[in-house]
Amino acid sequence: MLNISANTVAEKMQAELNHLKQAISVNDETGIQRHTTALAAYCELFQTNEIKKEEAYVDKQPVAHTPVSTVSTSQVSASPGHSSKPSNDGNLLDF
Image 1 (cartoon, rainbow, N blue to C red):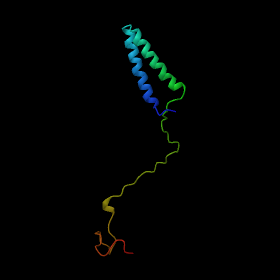
Image 2 (spheres, rainbow, N blue to C red):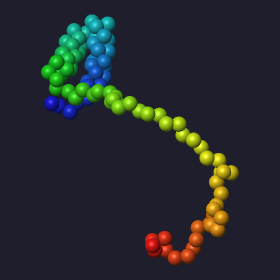
Image 3 (cartoon, helix red, strand yellow):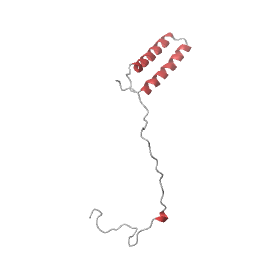
């Protein structure tokens, strides 16, 4: 399998189709042949599964939504005997 994106091939096909329409409008036989050949080659990529088809990611697991409560800063206070400032005594890693 080639590592070609299906979306990339589809975009190239759209560009070739636009060129084909332009060639048809001016009756350019060589251009018509060239662009239809290119389109046929792109179609063959899809028909022979030679491209990487992207699938949209769908999460199949249900998501439980839990409401988030907020805490007002006026409700938070330091415990008696404890300062709201961090202590400068010792190392935090000393147990």
